[in-house]
Length: 477
Image (cartoon, rainbow, N blue to C red):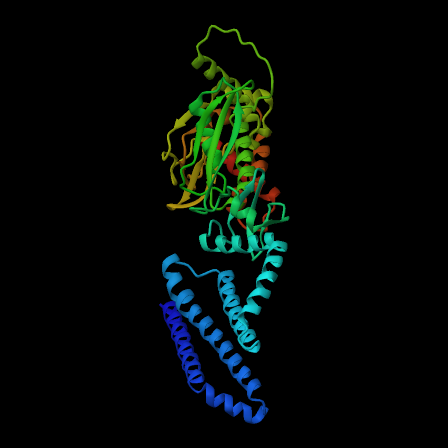
């Protein structure tokens, strides 16, 4: 509303200025003879006074024409047609042409009307100058065309040629200035910008879809890979939440199966950190799921088993590796980790399912192998859990109720370790309690709910060890 009022006032002032100059110009022409005689009295040269008054009227006419063009054409007509403000380059060009004509009128007056001599001289001069400056003139008019058609604007990311994508930072009368990702300025003449087949990554919308590829082994279940890679995309902060990200099987090569990951970022400049973080999350998720990124190799497998049996065997074989990579289980010996791997349960969840509910009693802990989980406290989302993380260990080891609700954001696979199994391991080696408590005390989540910010890790771990021993004595007596 205030913008409309301000624009209305500016239009009113422009029209008032135009009316005043028009009245002055008309009055000057009507009283031209009188003004010439009046000036002649002071100059004492009637011819010179006539030239002076005529030149003043030419300049005043130029001011009138310039004001009229700016107020009517550039102020009203063009904005309504193009729906945006006219380019400054075009406004300046109009002013230059108008005052060049006015200056030419002054020169004609000075030459006492010898227009032929002026045209002959100026024509020859124009040919010479035009031939010498033909490329600059072409750049100038291409700059006008760019400002009128607006195939790109300031801040847009454009591809001028292969492997050259940069942001537009300046458009002047001669060239367009581009800034690359490496903060190097590329200056491209306007004639080249107008003649090339440009790709504008900021039109029609500023959001941009990146496409990257990753190769994995042929032995993995495709649905499982889609879940793992989709979770990697959703766990990346640079991608647009809720956009239509895609993971698709694209083909095969000598290393295995080629997967295409397509995801949306808000602006083109976000693509580099987004690519880095998506790749990093893919590595983490595949690492947590026990899946290796293959290298060039030749492998012969002779087996009479079905493909589903191979998949299941691969998963069972990977459980030990998955658990060994989890921080909480670093306190366990290999034999103890193998015992857990042999007796744990694998749970599969679809998207938007509850894994644990806030306030429930905890009889197991979980290791997220595949997928992405959302953590909520009192129906407020407070964070996410990524592949390779452990959750539910506080409730299992101390008997405390679940502190949060954990829901699946994608198709999810978790490994469940029961309290009975953990008690057997702690009974066979009681000192493991202190090791587990120390690891938990170093966990940021545990620190956030500790008795105070000044509590030391050692003191917290001692408190947790007492809670774990007390809880397991109580439930097994």
